[in-house]
Amino acid sequence: MKNPTRLFLGALSLGVLYAFHRSNNFSTSSTKPSLPTPTMASSATRPLTAVIQKARNTHTATVFFMHGLGDSGDGWAPVARELSQLPSLQHIKWVLPNAPIQPVTLNYGMSMPSWYDITSLASLDETASEPGIMESAGRVSNLIKEEIETGIPSERIVVAGFSQGSVVALTIGLTSPSKFAGILVLSGYLPLRNKIFTLASEANKRIPIFQGHGDADAVVNYRFGHQSSKVLQENNYDVRFKTYSGMGHSTSDKELRDVAAFLKEVLPEQAA
Image (cartoon, rainbow, N blue to C red; front, side, top):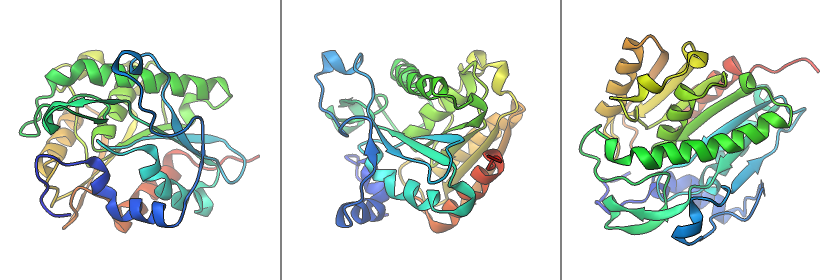
């Protein structure tokens, strides 16, 4: 990926996969039509929509994966489909929530799918985005609660995301009173770093965390991701940080293989 201008969209970071999705008419079931365009007054109260990739075998585990800025659940649906075809992951259902449409300061106030407002990518200080981060974490948590009510234990759920979506995943995974199987962070960073550990729950103090980041990322600085992993480790979290040489703000076959291995480890197939 070339160096982005200030007016970037998260969807561009997965341009190849997104083009694959469109050109091959990929489809998954969805709880509701993707990418609604609610008014600002209603977006905060309307339930999130989500793209669903059903488990191919008996459903015993679920991954909630949050997309990046400007993208949608559809943008990561091909990845969910690819991983769900692996023999060791066919028991996993994928839930790919769609972020609400809202103005983003970084993009000159343009409205787009966004989990929270971003004012700058110049530093790790995201305190200005705290209300939006916490609101989105709460709304995704409502979807997770619904999943648990269907019979999937929280210990069989992984919260995951890319870029902005991984910030929401980390927030949920670190602060939820429900114990999860793992947290998956791709090209992301630790949110609210001056406050997050005061909100952390005991339930997930030992949760496995996989963090992957390309050292050529021109959107979310690689240093931010690496620093985040160090802060988590200093606070006694089990973080496995992987560097992908030459990878920009995107993903790669190598990273996805590591993702698959992590999911196989923390969400092993259960005997029927």
